[in-house]
Amino acid sequence: MTRGTLTRAGLWAWVAGVLLFLFVPIITIVLFAFDRSKVETWPIRGWTTHWFSVAFHDPQVRSAFILSIKAATVATIVALLLGSLAAFGVHRARFFGRDSISLLLILPLALPGIITGVALNSAFQYAGIPLSFWTIVIGHATFCIVVVYNNVIARLRRTSGTLLEASADLGASGLQTLRFVTLPMIATALVSGALLAFALSFDEVIVTTFTAGAQNTLPIWIFGAIRLGQQLPEVNAVVTIVLVLMFIPIMIAARLTGSENVARMAEPSRKT
Amino acid sequence: MGRRVSPVSAALVRRAWLRTTLLLSPPLAWFLVIYLASLVIMLITSLWSVNSFTQTIDHTLTTQNFHQITTGAYPRIIARTVLLAALVTVTDAVLAFPFAYVMARVATRRTQRLLLVAVLLPLWASYLAKVYAWISILEKGGTLNWTFSKIGLPAPNLGFTNAAMWIAFTYIWLPYMIVPIYGALERIPSSLLEASADLGGSGRTTMGRVVLPLALPGLVAGSIFTFSLTLGDYVTPLLVGGANSTLIGNAIYENLLTGGNLPLAAALSTVPIVIMVVYLVVAKRLGAFDAL
Image 1 (cartoon, rainbow over the protein chains, first blue to last red):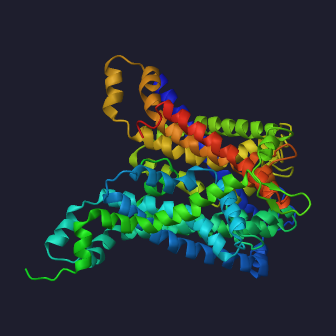
Image 2 (image 1 turned 120 degrees about the horizontal axis):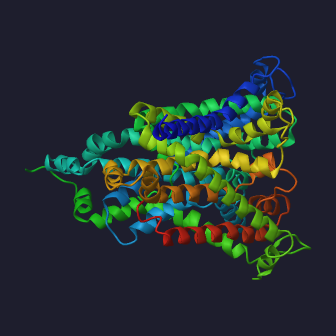
């Protein structure tokens, strides 16, 4: 064997090792959700779907799930509006302070989430605003805006402005151009941004702890249940349901705008 | 000819700045009024204190919180957090680089796409599911101890230790490191590697003097993520850590939610901000952003 093939074999072995590291935990958690035993022990001795039915009929899990869906829906709508406005504003304009604006939008993702949480909590306490559904939404929308913004501005940069000029030259009004040219151009980016924002909000726990007060979103319920450790088999089932539910919007988003783009959402410091 | 253009859209077309202002006002208002104002209020709160008799916030300015976080258990907690964040970042960089290299420069187009999805899924998988998985793996009756006993090795019993925290953090943030390094490696033109080889550079020389320097911006971008996310986390230490696993995030969490001391929590929150600002400035000095 030459050194080249040896290096290659080594590299592929590394890739296999990392893939194992990435997927073994996820597979483990899904397998344990079907474990018949009340106390987790590997290897699993008996199989059951009982815990899914327990989770499904648990009123606490149900109401937490509904709160999470509601909060994620409203946060996504706010993020869609503000994120795409910001993308349109920053995209075509060349003005002083443009870079500061993109930095400001990215800040909630670049700084640790706990900072956003404590900052909002301080502000709510100072202003005498009681924690409610709306304080959860405010926290979530603040970091969801960036996701929509990144998706839309990436699309705008790839589409040419000459289409808009052509539309105007052919006599279309601003609204007509928006309806028949711009929106179709960015539609998939909007849908993908909305799906990712929804997933991000649905799964968020670090910020939410400080903006939810006594309310339970699904992640807060899971966090509390793991800490108490009294209903762990049910937690396994709930966590598996969350994994599957998040998998769907992510795969649709990847289909719509490419896996590369969905992966890139992890780069807050990306120059915009 | 003769199509009536509404005066509003005519004004918007003529005055680009007006359009930009209208577009940017709502999102900027949100960020200024909600996000930046909250940050400012948090910074001011860090200079207040809690009256020990009434349990209400005393608005007299004082630096006592900052004195407090430089004494007692806090310096050790801060040092532990920074050390762990650095350790997690280095581990992730080591694990991610060869993987990203294969993705970007070795794999065929098809394999590249598959690997990208393979990173994407754990990246976007539920955070709590990923943390919880490590309890199941590392605890006494978990899969790791079982695997070790099958090979005939003594049980590592890593559950609820600092090592467990290190492994869990490394796992959760790994995709955030792979993606930017992959991006940087993919942008290197093949002609540069050919030129290096043509000029007599060995594989090792090309790797050390062409590939690594060009991948550095991606590595730094990833490290900002792994570092920053570890600095502010309190969920992972609470769930997989042990008795000596208190991080800055836990100190903030406890002071605010169970201790009722918002000013002290706010003062502690300035620590990750300062560390991240220093980190970003150093990264910039090193020229890490030039190629991004």
